[in-house]
Length: 138
Length: 434
Image 1 (cartoon, rainbow over the protein chains, first blue to last red):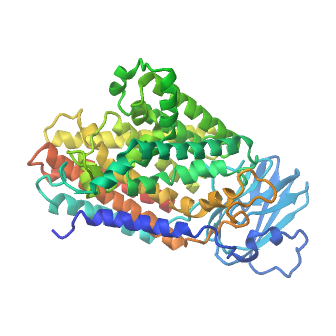
Image 2 (image 1 turned 90 degrees about the horizontal axis):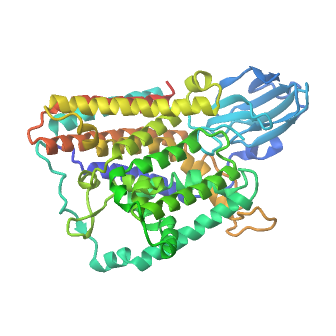
Image 3 (image 1 turned 60 degrees about the vertical axis):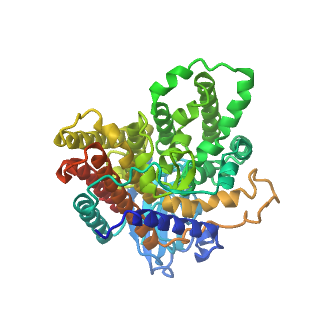
């Protein structure tokens, strides 16, 4: 038959070669635009200027999370506005995009950014460790 | 600290596209029958004398104890430095290099290195060097006679401990956890090595055994005359001895990676794993390992029964054939972690103690580029690794069946092949997220 076993190691090697070549490029400078600095956090922009894009709202009360929780799909490249309201002071962290903002009790806080990095990213409360939602950017 | 699927990391992979999952599953099933029905009918991989020898001079250098001691000394220096950073470096995981070195660069990096270069950790294991030093003071190894009977079971235990830490323990990414693990692991391994002798490391050091098990699929082997040779990895995998307990090691590796995949699915996160605590994690890990173990033993024994052979020996006989499948799972689940979050190691290594103004390699200001590998490339590598591992596994099992009975019928192998297809389709299902 034509399928020779020697092809298998070649295929394994190919997978590896991809891994090793990619590895050489350690941390290219921030190609994702503004999203990996904390500049995207704006606590006041609740006007109509940012009506475009996707608005995701969650409320935390007594340790329970309500609103757009779970796995939230987002189209890559879309502008995302996260609105978080908590009954206790804490800090929100969007993993991967590495965005943070402080929460004051009862005050809605916003994190706005362009979802330019594909993948699944958790949004959590730093102090309480509560998972608010996962952004599925694709 | 955050709750992520692996020890550390800032992202997880997107579910693979359904089409790709189905193509992968279809290819795996089709290729299984190609292997069973169309591949060779007489054993052809069992050639201990095959291979292209490396030049004798090169082998002398590679095998020389001076080179090996030197490499162990370098590894020891790095290990001590990482441990000191874990103890005294920055308290935040995102600023401390130790968790990234342990969970990504070392644990995941050991896979490609062992696959390309052979059983690397057995050669450079720094604990062997420390053990050698301690031997001067304590020359007797009272338990040496008992070690062979234990096979690889001690390594199974130490791998299970590490995997539980990596996949379940909530504070796994804390530098203090990493420090405690590194110190505790070294102390326990050294005490046991002093009791059982230096051979302990080949049987009880989980990392060394992990490296050796993967290296069975590397192109490097020892010919029966002792020469270091380059040869077909499938020959290596076939002629490598099947130690007692290899089944346990392989089942633990495959089951734990399956649990890692499971813990990233919406099903797990909103269902059985919603509590996200040690209890649900431990239960999930053990259930997945148990499931893999049950299916594998069932398939191997049924194949043996059909072939009219003693059933008890079958799981051990075929243990090596599951290694490529476990390896495929591992590549599929950790490739992106290594490529993307793995960059963190090289950034933080530039300033391991987080001191102001220190930037040894000029990389400290870099930002991890999470777009360095596209989602499409990741999905292709994932499916490619799973299917390649499957085909290699079925091929090795086919050869193993022919070795156990010269006129083995293809139909006798069917139960084990069906189990392998289940592992592969299950693995693709986990990547798809069900």
